[in-house]
Length: 89
Image 1 (cartoon, rainbow, N blue to C red):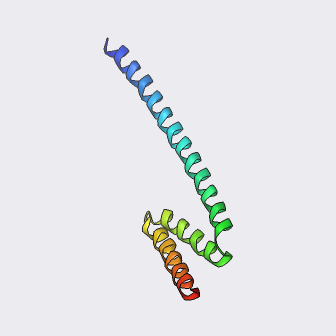
Image 2 (cartoon, one colour):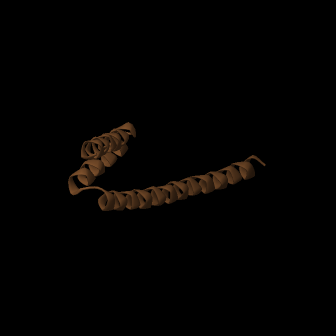
């Protein structure tokens, strides 16, 4: 019985390892597709200089695992746009 149990445990382990890899692959594909969509939206909605800055911030946020880097960039642009709008009025 012990041999059967270890064989079944090994089969279950293989299945779990495989599904874990597929889950990681699938999530990576979704994250990458979303990031590409975000970069395209940034390119459409911001000046080339702002888009480059936000693209760099996005990459650095991921690289350093710190989402606040990207958030600070967006907040800075919003603040600058509000100042420009109020000075035009």
